[in-house]
Amino acid sequence: PSKTFGGFDSTKDLPDEVITFARSHPAMYNPVFPINNRPIMIKTDVDYQFTQIVVDRVDAEDGQYDVMFIGTDIGTVLKVVSIPKETWHELEEVLLEEMTVFREPTVISAMKISTKQQQLYIGSATGVSQLPLHRCDVYGKACAECCLARDPYCAWDGSSCSRYFPTAKRRTRRQDIRNGDPLTHCSDLQHHDNPSGQTLEEKIIYGVENSSTFLECSPKSQRAVVYWQFQKQNDDRKEEIKVGDHMIRTEQGLLLRSLHRRDSGVYFCHAVEHGFMQTLLKVTLEVIDNDHLEELLHKEEDGDGSKTKDATNSMTPSQKIWYRDFMQLINHPNLNTMDEFCEQVWKRDRKQRRQRPANAQVNTNKWKHLQENKKGRNRRTHEFERAPRSV
Image 1 (spheres, rainbow, N blue to C red):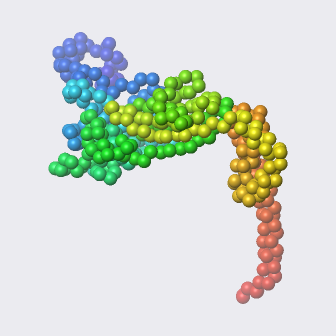
Image 2: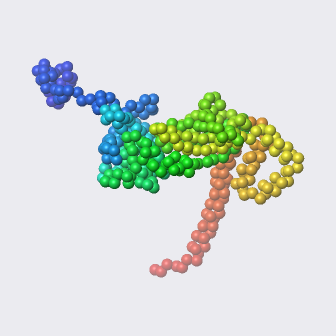
């Protein structure tokens, strides 16, 4: 309907001949359904909506795959690949990456793929940005991590995870998009103590009794399942950590709310994906009890103050600040939690930052005044010494 052509404001005003003609001449005789009569990707309980989608068909070692780049209304781009399970009629959507394109949340209104430049161009009301279609280096530096990523753009070349190019030599590149089985394609893993092929990261953390601490551990893959094991001191047995009120498991790691002496030991962070397990982190936690802090306090009162004073005099300014903070924790047993202690340190730092700009402004104004006086004297002096102009 159009007011310009025909003068109809609504389809209700159309003549019966027009309705009959439209009914007998459909644009499509049958509706068009998606593959397998179901959506390829479903996301629930998210704070965004899909706004744009572009698809790139990629040649991989075991076939062709459709990689989707989906834009959202908060300025993020989801990189998703459809992988068949047992047959091509049963597809599995795998989220490869979720990238933030713009600093401020904004609606992505346009997206274009350049296969020649291997770039994705994203447009919004704030501007235009570009992203590479593949970032193989973010998947890690081991064959297992590259294989578990299941990115059709990437493959293991023997030394790093890099761009995959179809070639006649099938074993020159290790890639398994359909199954993601590193034990089959990364044969050298059988000869390593650590199946991931990387050196295990080890940390030592000290905590104070009744305080809280956080053990940070997050896998690179978004599909990996993380679980923790605990090994007591002087004991070879490992037991799985059960999450409760005392311990809370988050996406970033493990939170211990109130430390006890029995929490001292070794914590192992494992990631499991497609039946393949790798150890990501080994943390040794030492819990200092309050009685030990009391003993340190009594030693200071019994005459070790001179030694402490000599030790502090030989320290650098940054070391003195750390030592002062630690001695403050010892000398104040009423601070039962590290949170209260850290809060006092943060308040002191904020107070110092507020005082610095005021003092800096005073000094700046003083020097500015002196410079102006100096410049004024120079101008008057040069005025008298200047030679007369020639007529």
